[in-house]
Structure formats: structure tokens, C-alpha cells
Image (tube, rainbow, N blue to C red; front, top):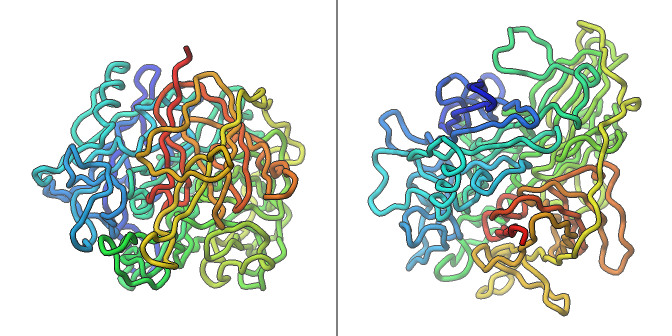
Length: 592
């Protein structure tokens, strides 16, 4: 997206709008989606959003505008079914009832009012007012917001005041302005909606995009890695050798519209009674696994590649699906399939790894990123290869495809994209991955304390055998028993600025949860199954990360350093879990 490069800061005005886009193959109906784009350039709206290119230590300021209105300025209804019985933004509650779990006298239908949003730069190291806090949402500045509705979330005004005291830019109705210093390491970030209780729906509708941070001492010189990457305004016919790839799963109705469950019964067949006659919400599904894979907003696309090296920045943007990616010659072969090419991973969420890692497959959980080099050299023109997914069509629980779980359906969710080799256009001057010397890597120092937290799941307290009704983060008591906590329980994690801690995540559930901690980049220490010895992190996890896969019935340890005061969040990045209590605020206290 094109910035305004005045002074030492790049400035954007980015809106969230509704539009139609061709997601399904040509000849199929177009799909109504939501996406980000430059408010001044209507032709830039796209799902996923066009990539923001940023430079280390050069600030970026974004005015994020909620433009979910029609041509007459009236608010648009939600694109997908909103369950109003969760703990969510709840604009109808007004100032006193917003950001709550509402009470009902009968089972409600889906919410149909104006849609709140707030955008989070995932992996960014930012002050609290620019983080995209779940209770700092805002409605569009529509002409027909119902009387009595809250137009902003509980923390919006506090963060607005803090931002405006530091910067010259003012927030306006229907928007928020965030300042990104872009300190840290060159890496792959992404942005997405993070509104309380409806993140799963706003992201599924299309509100996501890449944010690439380049330059500085933790990047490599141009030409060492494959490039260039796509940029807005490139002339037609430009060939790209660095390609960000956002992978998501989606289901579609016959008319091309997005399909997402409108009833809890889709998950487990439970048809009620629902809230308030029970404690089971009528619409929320504990997880959702769609029927087709999309890469950069297209179902099963074809990428024509040359016989040379390519750099792919993979992002798992699925709501709940853990991916196991592999390049093969036959997309319908029996799974697990033999790999035709073995990529090299050079980076993770926090930038380059200490050294390149050769992979037969790439395990990547929701919100994780992988910076990967694939070498197509020597393949004759016309060769066809396929990027497949061998992760399960269900929640990931660890283990090996074909042994511990059935891989994804080879005819649908087992296929991601196709590569077709075309003739070489220009010599490849990039360095072979096995010869790369990656930028210096400085591990974190000794930890001051170990903090024990828990991952929990709850069945119905009123209906025998029905569940889960919600999922929780929490603490442990002095006996090592879990203490599940809801989103609005008092803050229990309060590290001090400048301290380094070990967060010991005890997973008491049968699922693997990708846990994201806002504001920080951490290091994975180890994992330990109950009754077994601790195992070191996988080779591809030995850099900095902001999301870690916490395996079931195990302890996952990460080392975290906290360097700025403020209120942030940590949560499961299975979005259906995050939206129903598996998210907690934490506060970094100023040093005394």
C-alpha cells in the first residue's frame, strides 16, 4: 500500500471495507469479503491486504478506519453469524454493558448490528495504545448507529488520550491511529482484526495482511537471498522470487458466499437447550475446519516458477488448522507422501534463525510464520509440483501424519497450491541456503523467575457430557492444580520492565494450542511430557518467536524479556478458543 513519506515517518490511512473478489476458480461466483486497503486508493482493497513494507527504526503511523458501511453511510451487518452470548464487545450494552457476557431471557439469534474492529500488528513491539487491544475497538462512523449503543470499547478513550499526548495526530470517530517504531529484528509480521469475541469472524471474513520489516544489522544484504518481492505499482510482467504466502481454509456456499457455522450443532450435533436454558452458546463452535485451502486469497492457485531459488514467507492464517506442508509430485498420492523437494527454513516469527535448517516438511500452527527457501534448480520446463498439507482435518494433538492422525483429505484440504516450472529468465545470483551465514543471533540472558500458567477446557456444568462450553487460560495453585480464569478476572501476570522470565505453560487439555504473547519475542526453552524428560526445541524453533505450539498434556517453557510498560494480552491463536475466554490480559509494570 502506498505510504505518505513525510519526514522520518511513513503514514498510511487504511480502511476495512466490504467488496467482492474472485476467490473460487474462474467461472465460479465471486465472493463477498472484507479486506483492508488505502482509503485514498479504492483499487487497493484486497483480501488479503496488500503488504506493508517497513524499515527497521523508521516509524510507521497507520490510521485504521472502520469503513464497514454501505454507499449511503449506513452500517453493514456482520458478514458471518455473531454469537451474542459470548463475552464479547457487545455494543448494544452501552457504556456500562460493553465488553461483557450479556444475559438473555430466551435463546437469542445472531447479532445483526454495526461491527466493531481493532487491528493488531502481530509480532510488533509497540506501546499499549498501538497494540490493538481487544477492548479498544470502535464502530464505523455510520449515520444510523442505534441509540444507546457503545461506539467504542472500554479502553479506547484511555488509549486515545495516551496516544494524542505523545503524537501530533488525533483520532477521529470511526478510527484509531497507531504508531509503530519498528524496532527489533528484520522479520515477517502480519496484521489482523483482534476485536473481543469476534476475531474469528472478522479474520475469516478477510481482515488480514502481511507487514514485512526490512533492513538493519539483523537483515541480509540485497542479492544474498532470492528477490525481488511484489510491490504495489510494479510494471506488468515483473517476475518475483520472494513471495509472501498466506494460507487459510475457507468453505463456500453454492452462490460463492463464505460459509461459517450458524449453529453449535455443526460441531458436535448438540441441538440444545442453549443459553439461557443451559450454559452452551447457540452459535459458537469450539473449532472450525473449512473445506478448501486458499493461498493469498485464491483456492488452489498455480504459481509459475523458474528453475532457480525462491524465498517464500509462509504464514498460517487459519482459524484452527495446523498445517504440515510438503512439496510433492502427485497431489493425490497416498499420505504421508514422499517429498520431491526439501526446503530450507531460514527464519521464524522473530527473524532469521541462528543457522539454516533443512526440512522434509514444515509444521506451522496458526499465526506462526516460516521464512523458507525452495530450490527449483535443474527442473525442466513443464515440471509440475504441488504444495500439499498433511495436517489433520481436525484439531492438532501432536504426533505424526498417518500414524497418530489421518492427514487432510488429498482431494480438498490436502492441496494448497501448484507449481509449474517455466524457462529460466535470468541467472540466479542468490546464495545457496546451505552456504548462508545468517545475521548474528544474541540469545536472551538468565531468567529472574519462573511463572506457571495453565491451559484448560471446561465442559458444561449443567448438561452431562456436553462440551467444551469454553476454554481458559489460568494459573496453578500451590499443589500444581489448574486455576482457570476468564478474560475479565483480575490480572495475574505482572512482570516488571527489564526482567526476563520463564513462562511454564501447563496444558491440561487434549489439544495443541498455539500460544501468542503480545509485545514480545521469546525463545522456546523446552517441552516436557508428564513423567518424561524435557526435550529441547525443534531446530526450526531456535530463533525468536511470538507464538509457540503448546502440546497436549505437556509443559512448554519459553523465555521472555519484557522491555516496555503497558497492558497487553496473551492467548491461544485458535481463534474460536480466543473468542471464548482463552485470552488473558497481562500488565508489564514500570521499573521501580
